[in-house]
Length: 162
Image 1 (cartoon, rainbow, N blue to C red):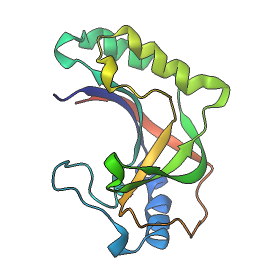
Image 2 (cartoon, rainbow, N blue to C red; image 1 turned 180 degrees about the horizontal axis):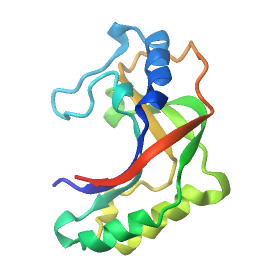
Image 3 (cartoon, rainbow, N blue to C red; image 1 turned 45 degrees about the horizontal axis):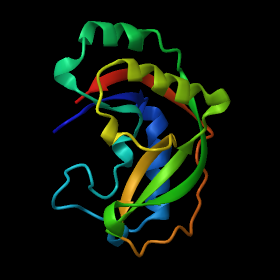
Image 4 (cartoon, rainbow, N blue to C red; image 1 turned 90 degrees about the vertical axis):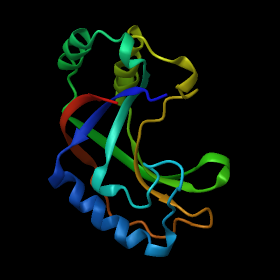
């Protein structure tokens, strides 16, 4: 089943320095591509975004109310932290991420506000760790290079997607 999600789209000019940094951090042979899951496709830095909430049951959502709720969100930019690696499914790959700082628990409060809409709780993560996924990498990858990253990134808009 496909679930709906809320994401913060980033401005293209904000993404370009991150795309360049990925080319410094990773070599072509470091990237991992899944034969099964279409979004696990190596370097995804050109499509980066922040997923704010995942797991909406699309056919049960009042789209008008959801859009009204989205319009009330006051989130103009994201403050960024450090790079980190997460283990992928059954250690088949690693995920290179950029930490998004959750100042004053603002992002968590925004995420929690979407729980009022019909969603599937079993697809929710146990803890909220805001991040931007940059790349899917082979399990042998180690993070050795740390080029400079922006400290803040501007949001283009917040949208509902399936």
